[in-house]
Image (spheres, rainbow, N blue to C red):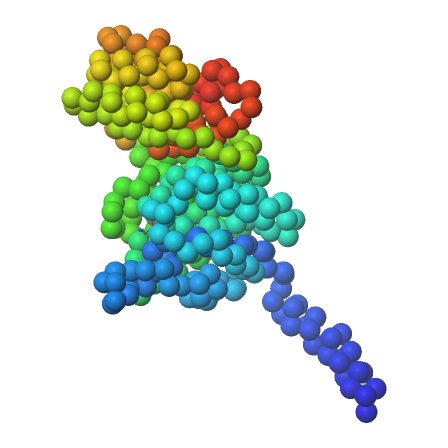
Length: 353
Ligand code: ASP
C-alpha cells in the first residue's frame, strides 16, 4: 500500500507537474517588490479622519490583477510609513537592502513602493548609491487603496512591467507613475493631489507605458555613483528670501553642519547679507552649495556683484548645476561621507555632463 502510494507520487511528479509548467511556456522573471508605505498602502480611517497606513506588502500585490501572469513576485516589507517620515538614514538602509536583492542572479529588477511626497529624493538617493545596472522602479499612488479609482494597482502593474521589459533597460532608478517614466535625477512632484503629479520639467520623460508595452523616448542616463557610506553628516537645506540676514546659515555652521545647501534666487543669486554668511561658512570649513528656487534651468556663475553666482564661486561655494536643491543636499551628504573628497571631485559630481 505504502509502495503503491510512492509510485503514484513519482508518476505525479514526473508527468503532471512538468506538464503544467510547460503549459505556462517559459519561467516567469523574478521581481522583488519592496514596500515602504505611502498613500498606495493607506486606507481611509474614520477615527482619525484621514488616510493611514493599512495595507501589507502581500495585500498590495494581491490587489493587482494580472501581475501573476507577467512576473513571479516576491515581497519584502521595509516599512509602512508616510514618506514625510523618511530620512536619509532610512534611505541608506533601503539602498543596502535593494543592493543585496540586485546582487541575486535570480532577480531581474526591484520595484520600490514609496510615498510620493519624498519619492523624488528617495529615488535619487538610491540612484546615486546603488552599484548595479538592473532596473529599480519607484512607484506609489496619489489615491489611497480605499479611494474611488485608486491608482495604485495600475501603477504597480506598470512598474513591474517596466522592471522586466527589454525596452526599459539602462535607465537606472526611475519614478514611474500614471504611465510616465521619469529619471531619478530630474523627477519632481508637481501637483499636491492630482494623479499626474510627477514630471521631469524641461528634461522630459524617459518613456511611457501603455497596455503591456514600454515606449522609449529618451536614452539619457546621467549617473553619478558613490559608495554607500556607513554614516551621513549633517547638511541642512535652507531657503533664502527677500530681507534674509543669513542668521540661519550662521546657526547651521555654529551647530555642527558639515555642509549647507542654499536655495538661492534665479540662476543662483543671494543678497549681500547671505553672501557674508556663506563666506563665514566657508571660512569655518563648511561646504556650501547654492541651488535655485526656480525649477527649470540651472545655476550658473552669471553675476559678479557680491551675492551673484560668480562671486559665490570665487568665495568658495559650489553651484548645484541642474540639480534641485533637495537632491544637491543628498549628493553633498553622500560626498562628504567619502574619504578623500576633493573640490575637483565635488565639482565633477555636480556637473551634469
Ligand atoms: N503623504 C503621502 C506620502 O508621501 C503621499 C503619497 O504617497 O501620495 O506618503
